[in-house]
Length: 347
Image (cartoon, rainbow, N blue to C red; front, side):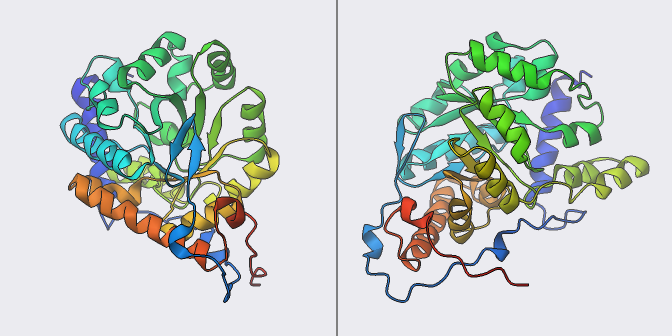
C-alpha cells in the first residue's frame, strides 16, 4: 500500500513521539536481564581505568562494544537525530546503525541519510538499513547497494518486523520467500549483510538458518524494549485494531533468552544483543550471555532528540557502568567478562 510522501514520514514521526512518551499503552515484556546476576569479586586485582573494552566489528576498531541502534522519525527531525548520533559515535568510538532508508531510497527525502553522515563519523562501523519485506516486493541487490553507498556504510542491516507489519494499517503481509531473498542478497552483495528483528527477538533455529546462509551478524532485538505492537495501538483509531495490537504488546522472545539461544545455536556467529538494554549493567549481562556487541536505541532517544552533547553524555554513562561491572567481576577485558561467574538462578 502506497502511503504517499507524507504518510510514511508522518508515521515515522508518530513512532518517535510515542517512544518518547512515558504513558504509552500496552504491557511491556520482561527482557530477562534482571534475572542475570553476577557473582561479586571482592578482590578484583585489576585497575578499573585499565580495563580494555575494545572490540572489532566490520574490520574497524571500537573503543567499547556498543552499537547505537536504529532510530528514526519524520524527515527533518530524523536528519538532526542522525547527525547527532553520528557525531557522538565518532567521538566515543562506537558503531552506528541508521533507521530504515526506504523514504530516502524512494526519493521522498533524505532523513539526513547521505554522505554527510559518513563525514561526521569517518572511523566507526556504519550500517545501512532496509526492510526484509521490501526484498519480496521488487527490491534486490541494486537497492541494497544504493542504501550502502548512500551513506558510505560498512554493511547493510535487513530488518525483520512481521508483527509490526501484521498490525500496521497497510502493512506488508506478504512474507513468503523472505529467507530466500535474504540468502540471495547475501550471495550477490559485495558487502556484509546483518539481519535484525525490531523487538520480538530471533530464535535459535531461525538464527542458525541465517548463519548458514552467510549472514555476517545477527541482532536479536528481543522483547522487553520498544514494543511496535504497543506503538501501533497508540496510532490507530480503530477499536478492533487497537485491541489486537494491545494483545500482542508483550509478544516475543525476551532479549536475555534470545541472546543465549542464538549464541548456543550459532557458536561462531557475530551476535548483537539489543532490545530493552537500559544501562551498562544490562550491557554487561548481554555480553556474558553471548553477545559480541550490545545495541541500544530507545534509552538513548531522549538525548538524541536534544543534542550531540546529550548523546555523548548518555553513552559515556553506559560505558562507565559497563566498566564497573567488569571491575566488580574481576574482568580485565570483554573476554574475561564472558567467563565471569553468575549467581545460581533464584527460584
